[in-house]
Length: 269
Image (cartoon, rainbow, N blue to C red):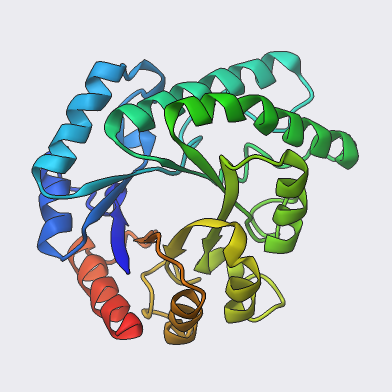
């Protein structure tokens, strides 16, 4: 199994320092949050290529992007306002180009606040806008060699797309090889189904996987029993990235990265 880590984990380092830290802890891939690059909308292809070269110069693979709409304003995936829809579409297309120029091929789309439905909106209409958005984006993703891994999130974070099953129904309607499913342990923990069962049922659609825990720390650092999850990934032939995404800034990055790697190695044998 290939293990990556998200770059914002190493919040006290510059980009090169982050790459060095990831390598020091044994990770072979780096996943990047666009907001860590300054103003993502202003990042040029040339600048993205240089960043990708830094990743590769450290012996890492560039996995892709996540937290796509974090710390941004004016974007929303399901808003009926045509102006907001156009801005969001153009930004997503730009991020696909940035991702590709950096050498990545995955974009994890979570962004709960930028897809949450206003009570006045029709859910069927919002679903139709969602489907249309990704159907129109798909040719641009294909041209860039990038896949959207769409992340369902628990009801405490958003009222739109809360389970793997719900996501898959929408993905079937989008019907694009470049728009697939993302699995995240923290998100799966909000479902009523056991996490290993969700993994088993969802693997044919899964393009990417985040290893973490509902306590916002790394895999194996909280109440979730990670080895049965790893077993389902292995048994199902999952051969893509397992990427550590953590949120607890009260724990040192060094501890989060080291403990996560130790637990991943133990779980996957």
